[in-house]
Image 1 (spheres, rainbow, N blue to C red):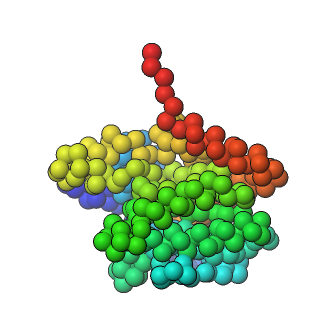
Image 2: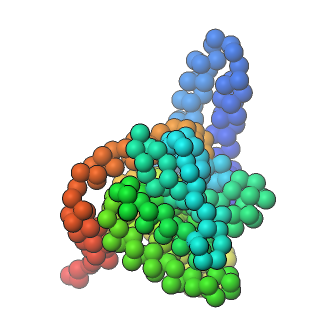
Length: 318
């Protein structure tokens, strides 16, 4: 049984319960609310049996679930008057990343994030959330505008990685990511990062430098995808599960290493089972984190950001 089949077999009882909730939600029956509450409790019991034994490779499949909330879902539910900005003023627009300005809790913010697309056509159009150099340069337009006017930056990460095509390399993929790292490191406004699905390599890091880095509970963040790691180290796609197990890509591992600052809990079954509840959890995190960061003097903000990333990878030998 493949990794994908393995996970989807495990979640089948929860999906069936969720389908019943969806049907009841369309029902005007006065007793529907009690039935929905009972079904939600049943989902919690099923998830309590499944969750402790989930492997890293199964977490990867949850993070990639096609029904998880994407960046535009967060923007549409949490923000008002989103004004998307297109193009890098050098080459083209990159639909793999959404970037613009919006109102959040009555204040203007810059918001950026990968967007994979739902349907096959959308996924192809958005290149499966894999950014080209023009995407990173479009992001720079938005965050520099945010810095000019003192708007905080919110970044949603959900990508398998930067696009590795020949055209992307010809247009300076590596330089574009490196330049973003430099600019984000010294940006004089608060930056809040949330990994909402996949956090793949430099594709994620190019919009992932900030004052607070959080992950949804069932997302993952890694230097390379498990498939890429298996291809390089073992030259065998049957080693994907082994790669995932050894890469320490889960939120709880990265929190322990100090790579991320907070784990945002997901509803039982994962964010795709109850997207609105997952989005509310992210909303609470964003609101609390921005409130804590906005009063911090700019010099202190930059110093703390510098020290945050400098201390990563420190180890001792006994």
